Image 1 (cartoon, rainbow, N blue to C red):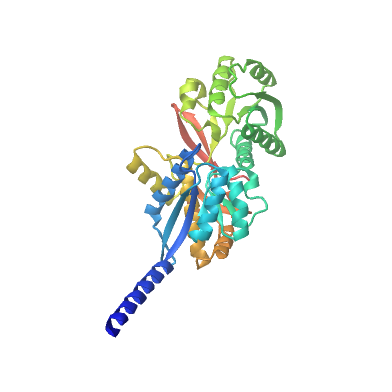
Image 2: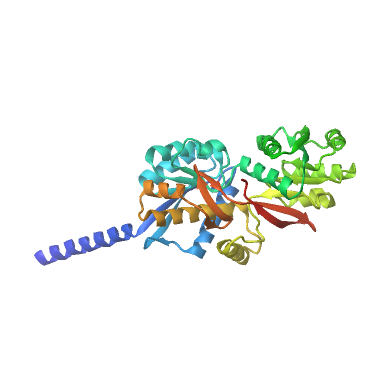
Length: 374
């Protein structure tokens, strides 16, 4: 009887010891992502990118295995907040990736601040996401940064001294980019000779374009989405405008070519990255592996999800321990880290990284250069 009891107790002790050691050897990172709901495509692409880059760099840090814990926030900010609480309190994650969209990040941020667990979004661009926060980060750059890069490129590379702006007043994104471009372009000595506006769904831009052509700008900045950009290009060329057209990442869609045809040939735009050319070794490996697995070029969301994972992995390594506060401090100290989209530095929670400039040639985007605003 005593031998049987001893054997049972020994078995329980060994089982507990193995479980404890196993737990100790695992570092848990949460993924609070939109796997279903209105913007499920975003979360799914980010999750795909995280797992793809894990195949390249591995899933071990500090001698322990990284375990990803995925919770679907259903593209809803209340669900995102609940997911954050569950990941921290129940799943005991030491850091979190996501959500993808700014509204959900704004709901998650205060929870991570209170519980002192760092969260990094791959793609949330609203400046308020990180403003006044110590534990909230992003892997993408902000719209003011992108517009500053566009203005710098226009003056230094396109030799522009005058510019016109035609932006979509129905979209905050477009208006903001136009305003930030104007501010940076004039600060660098350029002159805005005409500011015109349109609305999403407009078909006729002849009045605005005629006014712009009469002002004779060196470049036309069109920080809109691809449909309006394509239509504006078609009408501008039909009216005889021969100047340079510059846009932003809203142009990054294959529909630009199907709608714009030959009229979009030669236009430039700023982008988060270029899927045809890796800026470093890990970026090229990511592109190559993605093409091998899926037979197409990788997407921006997956690449930024991979960036978020690499930032966290590097921070945990430099922190030297799986402590959320130490990891938070290490994230903020990230400097010139090689990630999939290039090199990244974190400043006040935001990513500082190269802005890619591409040009339309032969019905496709061609890499031109990277710009780091100064």
